[in-house]
Length: 396
Image (cartoon, rainbow, N blue to C red):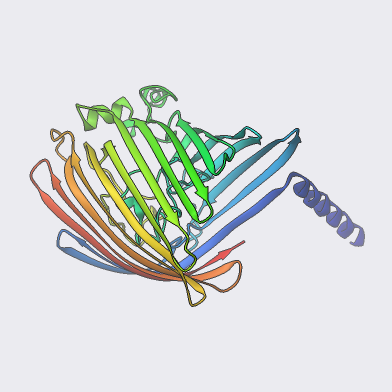
């Protein structure tokens, strides 16, 4: 028994040393809390009270690591999975590493990465330009303060993505990004036939493709950035949603300045050709789609419009107070589609975090969202949601 124990210790020690040499790290966080939400779908009210995972930060675990190749070159990876802490289920049923799956190379020339990550105008992923620096509550605590209510391009994660980030030049960084096919799991028209699986090849007009460039600048307390992106929708989307255009052009910008006692921030965006944004499909508390951004859906038709998000963070009684408000206004560019719509959205949110230790915090938040839209078919609708939550996040 003693010899077997020594062998086990030796094996574990060897594995640990190997991991240390390669600088591989297991990391993650668990976020659990309670939530009350009242929805008003065009006059039909529903109240729900439930336990929820990932309200403040998506519950996740992942692996990341780097290896020094010498001569100034480093290779690394990130593999990150999302899960529902209240049920133990995976965030998505068809992806092991839904949140991020990247291989990257760093050198004196910058960083080049390949795999699944967020777009440059997204609030998610490694490059995260429109996240916490652009909005006080980022892409939201659940729907509280969710910048995606007002801004079109802050939620996407994409497959088959190539990203370049330049070295720092006197505070400036330049980015370039391309996704040859945004979603490899997407099968047009829900058809699993061989013909449909062949359709949508990477880089072809049968697939949604994304291209973006950005420049950011940081000097002391000032952070700012400008992003331009273009999405070329697949011909399947174009044919079903519009007769005029199958391309979205999005210009986004943000700025924040940390005064110490308060950090105000502003994000603005203009788009032309984007899918109708911010429409909410209020999900049920027991839905398997929680955490998958399924509470956002797009009606038919492409739109053009603008969005603005303003907010601030401030240290208060040992914690951090966060407040934000957002608004957008858009119009359909193809009223021939039955569900095409003009509309505007309003978002108000406030949250507070209090650290119990370096790895554990508690939070509470409340918010209100309003969605008004006028469909091409002649119908008008107004949806509202009010939400209150509290919970705890533990990082490891």
